[in-house]
Image (cartoon, rainbow, N blue to C red; front, side):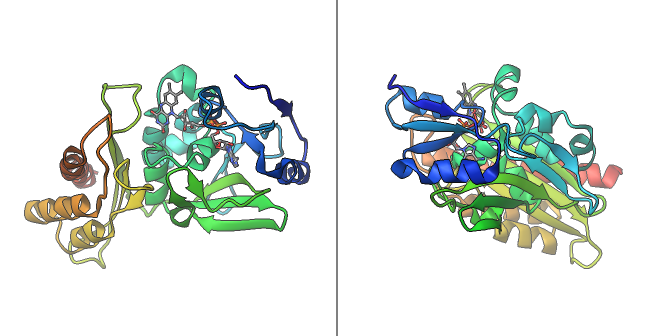
Length: 290
Ligand SMILES: Cc1cc2nc3c(=O)[nH]c(=O)nc-3n(C[C@H](O)[C@H](O)[C@H](O)COP(=O)(O)OP(=O)(O)OC[C@H]3O[C@@H](n4cnc5c(N)ncnc54)[C@H](O)[C@@H]3O)c2cc1C
């Protein structure tokens, strides 16, 4: 493996300045479960890695006074998946984070690294899209925030510009009575990267014709994790079995998957339909039981 320098800045300003130097050859370093593999395989050749874990607030997970959940970008998957407030109020996110790899890997892998890596299969992303999370960024021009839905530009590409780093993700409180589930299909039952993933969040809504409103997000079936807007709209109109089937087909139609070593595009598309239907049926059953 090619050698590189390791630096551990203490302030965001120092980290940003380090990322600006080195002519684009400095990389943020969080859990390093993605980064190290890419360096070792020769896909990336950084001169320096900038460890962001000691920066202020980077490792904290807390509910803010306004009720929003704040996840420091270097909080680990296990920190989020096992956090009592996340389990109680944002359980869909806990499911997504708990589905990543193994317990050991989740002790290193961070939510920020998962998002900044910008894999279409990032397992924290669909839940965060359903909850309408916001990404907070620090860089040479100061702070800025973007809705997570606008954060991803394509495989491996985000809105982050040179010198910028993700500092936190905030997640608004879900609507009262919201129920969510994350359905992940990998090549093995646990521990594998998603071949397809579907996050479903539904809640009672007397203003909607079906009496329910929905957010649905898909992973590993498009260049970025995406929301399935037409499926959400159809379920708001009609959550009967026929409506659920129509929405599941609309979710499949929103997918733009590729054929790769892990699955064909046709299989992925059909699995979006199946997992969406299963997820919606499960959410509806739990909403009716509560
Ligand atoms: C065996 C194995 C199994 C895996 N299984 C899964 C799985 O089931 N689901 C899944 O989603 N992923 C999986 N992954 C991928 C990986 O573990 C996750 O994407 C992880 O969350 C990455 O986090 P990290 O902290 O290790 O990121 P790092 O490797 O440290 O960084 C990843 C990328 O993001 C950049 N970066 C990191 N933090 C920031 C920041 N705050 N601001 C700007 N840029 C930043 C880095 O420079 C790098 O380019 C697996 C990986 C391995 C090795």
